[in-house]
Length: 220
Image (cartoon, rainbow, N blue to C red; front, top):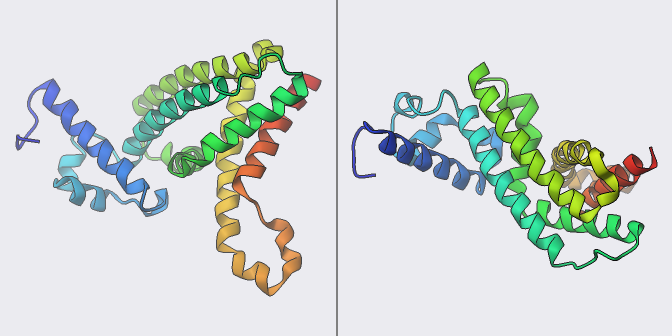
């Protein structure tokens, strides 16, 4: 940034982009819970009060990062499924294959899964109604795109694709949180192997959850 204070709309957007890029980079180093406004401000070379000129809170920054990351991840999912070339496969095979592709793509973005797991309980708690409306509208557009990907894979879902997509996202955050907790509890499982029944491995658990949601929705 070659200016001290953003005055034009272009400069304001440039500064917003810089802040979001810094936050995204930090999420590659630390969990959402550890990302503070103070450290974010330090990394972009601004006082906290100046960061708050562009975003109303840390949470608003992270909601913006979530949507951008999710949009890119959906594009990646679409490309990964297209590469499978399973359009003529039987329904059970397509369900398992799509669930496997989704789990693989999602697991490659732990920062996004961490954001999704914190969305309802943390990120949407310290923002204005206006910010929530912006985020939810963007999320609705993202869900439409995800539903299109799901429909190409499992056209049998029909109008239920958006519901399946929403459940997939919710479960992704929950499964990620459990998988992370399992990693932290590994020493307890070594002390008492019987406790390992509570271990959650991210990719297999995600694949199972997505396949179950799709199959269950079709069964209903």
